Length: 238
Image (cartoon, rainbow, N blue to C red):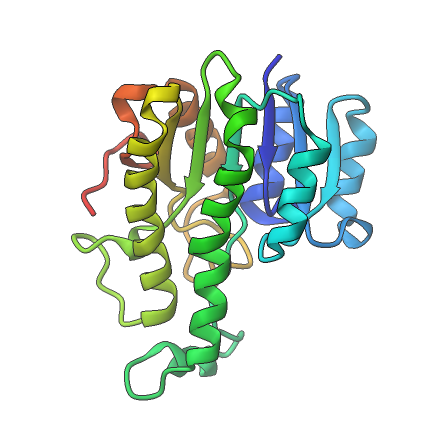
């Protein structure tokens, strides 16, 4: 049985990752900002007693990250999935997308999204590096997006795209920093998934995306460390 820690586990891809790993008999430590309001996650925990542990964690609260790492001292984490993320200014009518475009940029929102999407995942990795390095096949996984690729990304959304591009670069550096400890570091793209974050243009069912992500994660080793891989196994140029 592997132990998997997942951030942003109360909805969307994080919730489905939690569901599939728990259903497979793995131990899951699922974190989210407000466990009391995470009805679906709590239902999963009730359905998998002893396998699913729910923890409160706002990934932008670095003291809280350190505190959780301290509480879990001595726990070996085989796979840590940094899934929590924020798409930035956007509303159902897409009127706020202008805040991500040059000439009308919302810099306060830009800073906030960089905190969530780039700084926080690296802080989580730093706090839990020893927990992960203790595993036989240690893997640090970061849910990214092809919008952060200079090759595939052709979107004028400065806020979200830059945060994912920065995350991708950090993953390559993290792969070098943790190579001697045997830790595989991987950026993954889940595809355009039908979730709240994915929006109305999404085409991929969340279950299919997560099954693909799990296969990619399961097959990853040091030879893939630092790479950016799509849910279907394709390597993404970035």
